[in-house]
Image (cartoon, rainbow over all chains, first blue to last red; front, side, top):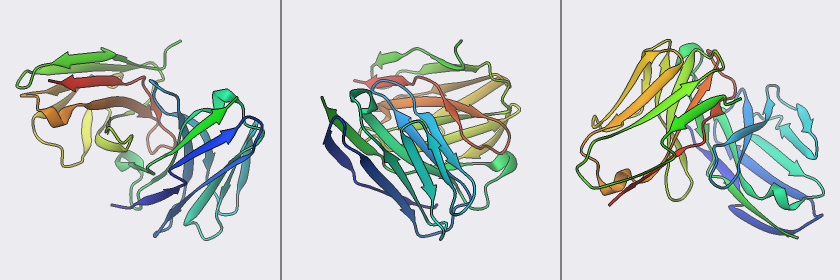
Length: 115
Length: 112
């Protein structure tokens, strides 16, 4: 199956700092999704990107769909303690669609914010 | 209002036992999934069901048997539990064809 390479693996930052993480693939994705998982909870969808070059914001979060369609970036501005968690990128496998829809997830970026 | 719910939240059991995890979604979605998250937090799909029909089975051992009595429910039964089955299991749902899945809170399974 397809693989998503997510980096960095972990980040330790001070409250108020901006954060940037990215996801790359060797193959083209038609959709990029960014999820956040709080400790002890399931992943929650933050942002969905559907078009190459698309830039979408959700509050302090901004994500971009790379123009090559092989990468995506997530930025968090002015981080706060509740931003702590694991951030996952994900995308549907090529050829998966309709009832055959299947997501591949990156390995996650663990974010720690020091107050 | 709970969108995707799972029970139990925690499950501790002995090797060799059989256990079940239940999942329900009230979002009206057609497709439901089971994911496994290992100790390194890697999320991998196990199964997907669409309108009670099995669509995806990702080379999961046949000790794992999902069952969908209706499109709002997808349960996971595991026979002869092994140590390596210890993980967090997430149920999820989505509209047909995605995009973006809604996850349940997870069931942490510990096999002793």
